Length: 212
Length: 203
Image 1 (cartoon, rainbow over the protein chains, first blue to last red):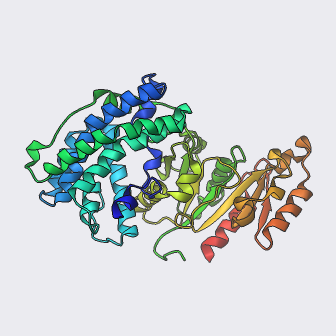
Image 2 (image 1 turned 90 degrees about the vertical axis):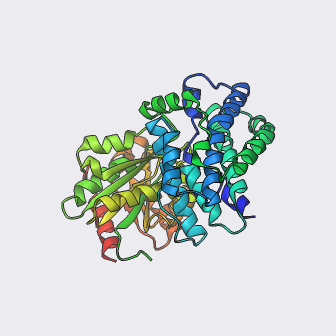
Image 3 (image 1 turned 45 degrees about the vertical axis):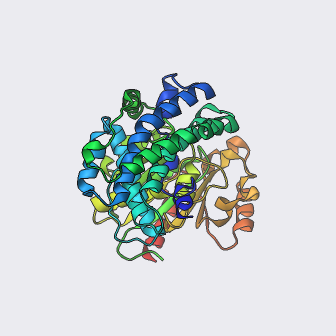
């Protein structure tokens, strides 16, 4: 049940204001409807999602120094705007979790996927596999929700795209959990350059609905 | 109750165009000399409100932070206040002597109110040009806000709004809760609203 609590879209940790890069992709004309949404989400899951799942699982394993792990996270986010967004989301999650879960000893400033792992480690019954599932799911659920708002998509079709990606997300989470305690040099570093480039354009654009 | 060791936080909400940003600017003018102030704005899709305040020169730009709300201004002030809390706490950490933080909502609808997890008191701003029936419609903002401001009273004759009807309906909806009619054209310092804010700080 604790994993459902943490991954609920209504859990108040600030994710609603972030689009996971899809606002930038919509502004650039790369995502225009459900078909291109499917391509975007598949790409995001297998790049940023895979990295986030691995970082979250590693953080939840308790096998690593958090400062080093957080530095590994930072090194995998080339865009300064995305690094800032990841820190913001991490801080907000930790602050919410400290209060909601009555976990005063949680750290206060980590990158988002590392924060997810740390929160899982501090939550009864949760471990690396849960953290990885959370991070993989979060990598696509946020942008899907934002796409519905930005493009007026049929929400049933948009969430159908998310549902179709669940087997892939499960596989990515399983791989992340399996490697959680391996040395940090084994962490994946798949990149999605357009997410980084788009994030920089987004941060500089005058009219935008989402914070990232 | 507010912890004694932090500034008072007051939310300013209300529909689009009712004059929330202008009221915040007026309060900065009125109170800036006597109080240590900071402002968080929640713009809908730009940082226009924050930029307006910075350009107006009513407050050091370093004391103004803009929060983006992802299409849902009411979510950011009510259901998931985490981004706003972070912005408020960053300002409080940077300016140690703050007395007051104003949190301006993005323009929303009559149901948008602040969570008391984010603010200690809240002001709901309507304007006469939005129609003199709005107070009668009620809703959480009109009915429950700690202060209701009916703004732009100078426009009443131009838009055919009956201020007596607005004040009367507001009083019926709100009971003992205060209502202030104001015109920032006639009173750029919003003296009555500033007085209400001072009273909240003195509590």
